[in-house]
Image (cartoon, rainbow, N blue to C red; front, side, top):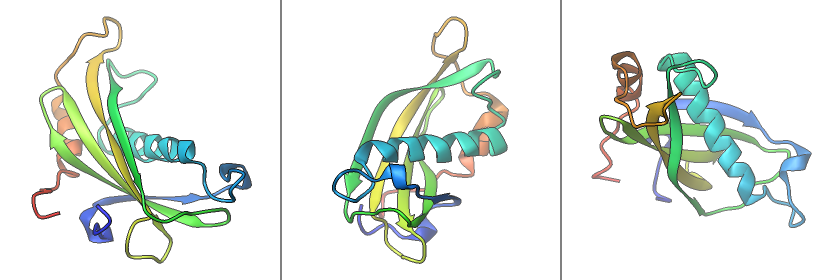
Length: 146
């Protein structure tokens, strides 16, 4: 995973770290990375897959997640959050996010999670809409070589 490169990720979101992101060890607290993962995924879903967390008939529920930490980051770094899809099913999608320090070619953190899409009201599994699927397919990358 540490061998990932920026070109492996088709979508990026910039994040300026805050003082409060640091923990007592003067690096970004591990829990903050999950906030970053949510931010890049939901920014993409809203802008490019036409899914709104507040009013779409389908919502994505996280059913698994992971993070691998390679080098520490801290305030006042500017981060580039790379996003790609590694698996796209009929009702689920697995994302991978790489956290790069601005200007650095290899990631400091690689993580991700799986969304299962469900009906907002019944919470039963539901097929990803054609419009959302079209947006997610733009992020789909073959991971066999990585």
